[in-house]
Image (cartoon, rainbow, N blue to C red; front, side):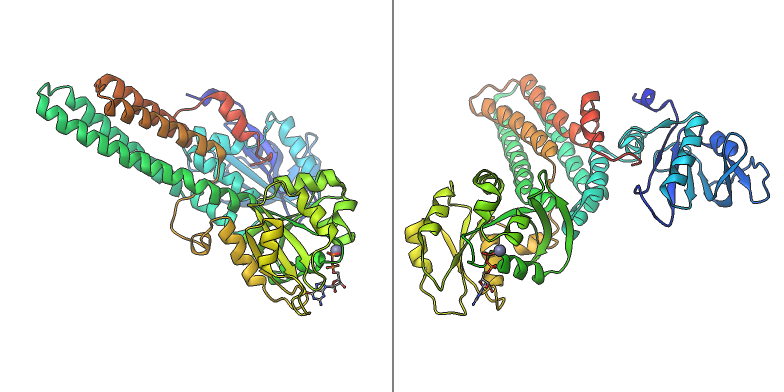
Length: 467
Ligand code: GDP
Ligand code: ZN
């Protein structure tokens, strides 16, 4: 049991740090109620010992010397029907980071320990409130930068993926039973029929696992956004294209300053696709993105990009500089040539570009008039092998985590091993059983039935404190 990880009482500020209408200090553990009694006073300044489960009390928080810190709404939630499965207290105080911190300090002075990142969620997992997939989904939900990634995270939180894993586990257990029963039939004929059945089961399961693994590509795009780089020489219309894309969907979800001052990423929804535009600062502020952010950085963003939009000025035809940029594109399969300024007389054709630049895809647009933007979105989906319908809310279960993908691969490999030895005629049921057990173990790790401590550290250290 992992209960030893939950012996002390933890506390943290559970709302964003900064000015806000309210700030919440959350306490979880066996001393939560004691701490509440120590800190809480009624409006009239009296101590209060009895708190009903899940009832809001209005009053004051006082420090060790009985001095009021702030007015609060306090709620006590009795174990085990709480998020963490432990006694939980929440103090809702009047925003203002100084006050919230002061309240937290008093809570810690009363014996609570500052929670580690994700520790509340970890306790919820340890007490069986949620499985590991759901715990991870909570973090994904917090970090979601698009509606779509939030939706997928929420589905996982609601147990969609966990349910699918359970189904696979059940089928594996059934298969194991069939194999073990086969030991009891030494009869040759029966054995042949059985081995046939087992192979079929195995193939079916391998297929299912593979399908699930395949969803990771799409899942990753949804979770992280599709990384798009816009390149081209000065004045071809990169900024204009960027603006056309941004105007399509005004909802700029995040604006993340990158690791350096020059690189800014913007996440937008472009025709339902969560898109991360790389190096938009460079494109916006300078005429020549290659010069300004330096060859090295552009190469880096080119290397990282899932899609490269190579913009050309259709009214001017191909220039030396275009060719120079083309030579920087180390791979061509993720490049879409974008012939811009279609509202003017064009001196470039897609055929010409496919031939001279070796790009597979080409779209003609007018960034100025907003024409061809739909076609550009379709070309991107085609390139990424994405189905717009499935992206926009199919019923499919999606894998969005590398950890899950690896474990599914491991399960699949074990089953392939079993199938191989069956095909080769080594039919020792004991060995088959062992392979099935390996697959079961891998699936168990996904939902957290099988846990190791370092796995814990890795998963929960990604959370923010207070979750
Ligand atoms: P960048 O240097 O590649 O970012 O190019 P800009 O977006 O700054 O555009 C350079 C010039 O081309 C500006 O004067 C734009 O108004 C013009 N331009 C951009 N797109 C179009 C277009 O589709 N049609 C026409 N006619 N002009 C455009
Ligand atoms: Zn520009």
